[in-house]
Length: 315
Image (cartoon, rainbow, N blue to C red; front, side, top):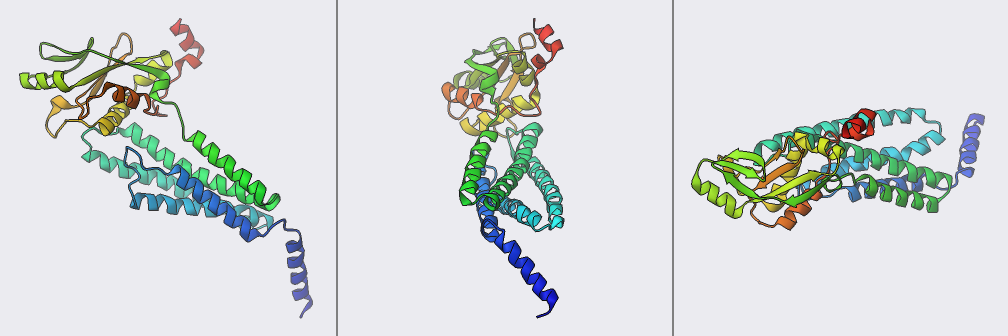
């Protein structure tokens, strides 16, 4: 064997002697932790999105790719394969495409929705799917790095940390945090449908009015402070509430029957929201719980009280 061959063997042996644990095992642990984290964050809920099974397969495949990139990064850097860092830039580009894919898909599905989600809700869902791929990569990177540095027990601690952190990061503010939902009177002033003192719409046919009064539900959504009032002022937030209520309670709206369209309008003096819906299941307690659990959209969130001018205006 030549001297150059001996030098390569010595270098390889020296590297092997300095490795705390098998790199293949560290990569495997990182990939398993990343895929499990993505599976943990992937749920089919009332929105029926992602669809089952095809939509879930797509996102699990992307989660596997994210976990693979994250798990091989630390071993690559240890062996001074700095070209591997470029995979992070490529991954970021691909995950931005995930966001675009979700936006485009949900926007097309809007055409078939009798009570649409709204563009703000769609954008929030698209951002969520993009961010969860980054969380998957971070989980795999942490577990793989800890496995190399300290062993399998540290990798296990890292995996548990990210699973708990992912659960926390999946939770944001909901409407119940910023507003109170109370029952309201549904009545007519002539042909004008009212929720307490808030005008909803004009209903011309007497038989439609009778059905609305007999089977409709109405609530007032009262903001707890100026932050809540500013958030509920956003049309996208109100549309998200309507879509969620219609998805879970059902709606008797049909194509061409505008009188049965769920609507949410604002009292311009108080900022309260009057909501009307003609549900399949007439249950106020259920409707209140649904509204309380609707997420506050990032694009709709407003915090005027965090500014000096906003606090002065509120006094």
